[in-house]
Image (cartoon, rainbow, N blue to C red; front, side):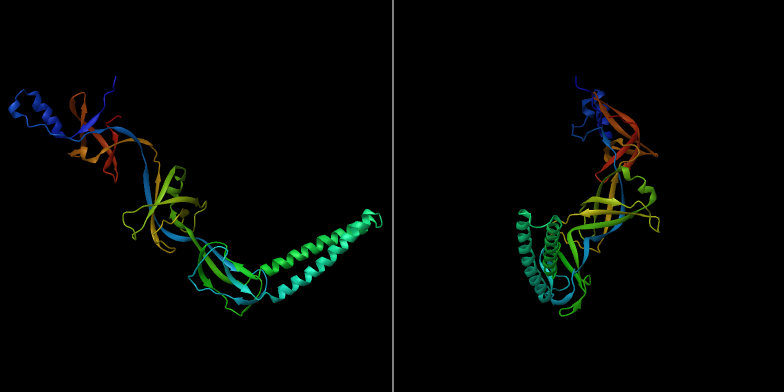
Length: 321
């Protein structure tokens, strides 16, 4: 047995039905279609919006791990670079000489350790002498590795795809290890920050999803992923919320731009009813609509709630699914 379905229809349908019961066909207009809607329960979802700012995903300040003279710095501010691309070089001559000397010493020590192994196998040296030879082998291996690393560190590679934000030295300039050379901005994804008040911070367990909009692209909403919300308020008694946005092709958004962040959340009453706003009639401060059920219509008073952007209105009381 099919359950009866409640349907909402305009006042005109009720008038037509009443006229049809009078038995006077001359007073009945030609039938015409009307819109109906099934009353269904819907999970409620509220939202609040806050002003926000686009930030870069990552900003790193790069420096050499060794000292020397800047031999090459072929960059300009704002230039795009790929991960692994060499951004700057130091004069490698001193480090190459150090590596060559260490390699020669390494060959001598390894040959000596090989001889000690043969002697130890024939029991011609003591255990302590053999252990000393092995320790010398470990030491020279570490020294060789350090020399190779030092030569490699005369080159400064890009840790990720990004844009050069600023240059802090020039070619032919002497720098120490750790001297700031340049800063690099990662724009593979963007971070959007906003601040929320304490009353809304307490609702964070009900947060469902996040979007942002900008005046640069009217009518468009962009999805966000929550990174985190600070656990302590700032001096203005606001909590910082950070979101990640993966830029879409052709969408020109950059750090420093202002946006509007919208957070959708579950209210206290998670389930309510929604009907088309056009089905609700207001008169003398009251609201009602018309119910179609089993071939009849009747007037039903209701209490309305929030009006949504899709043309629906929440019904607090007066209806059931």
